Length: 341
Ligand code: PLP
Ligand code: COI
Image 1: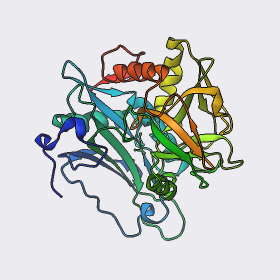
Image 2: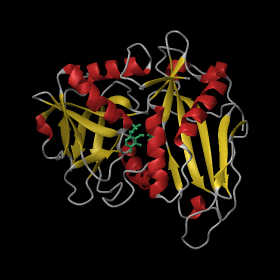
Image 3: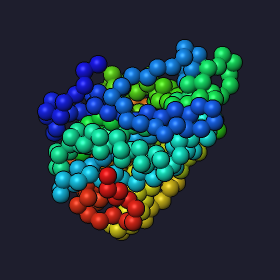
């Protein structure tokens, strides 16, 4: 594979794609312990044909970003939360978690090694960090692996949803992403494999992503394929779905805290697809999505428009400015949210 060079990139227009950067991080769990781990220039992975991940899907991953500050330094946003969530995902799939403190250290190390690829301040691009854990021990019966690999790849990215801060259209699907007793709360590859077909149908029909409904009644909003959902009610509440089968988003947890700064009451609650009139604005929130306005949701052929299909609502804009101001290091965030690399 050809390694990317920093001069290859037109930072404001890079899209959300993989580029092979100079360094990745790699650690192995064998004989009951994790090795020291190291930076490597090898962006390929070698494993047995009987590795658990290839057959029974022992894989958990994370997504966070490194942000270039105005002073030239680099910040991470709440990386300890990613470490914790990966620990939980690993436990759900009976995988050996990579120690949380070493997770944050390794993220810093690999970002530092690729620092020329952290896009410039103000370019709208960031360095996306993708830690992942795979079961590499050999199995043929359905059993957990006893060997694991932990990797971190990094790649520069622009907006996940095409419009960025332009509102886009979303659609519900007859497919489910995850079951209530399943793995929806874990960031594991199987959830995303099952979302590929509904996601691809939605894209072919011109929508940005799927709005999944709850797997029992198909009535309440769960989340989007790659982000949590929020709505701002006409009486000023910041509402986001509560469900046992959605990913506990770190961006969501952060916005639940920030909403009250703008006089919005935060609430995690059931949100019926038939009760969208309560909202004046709606959006997607996540590391990749940041905050992306949801212009409309189409359900059973009926399109519901929120604030506007072309303009960003005032509360969505305020939340975006505050969140991205903290992530870029322009605004001081709550303790521990901004971690210098
Ligand atoms: N929901 C799904 C399905 C996701 O893939 C993501 C992305 O990580 C999120 C929500 C948002 O989570 P976070 O804010 O922690 O990135
Ligand atoms: C993230 O926001 O980090 C994610 O993992 C979402 C993914 C669909 C790109």
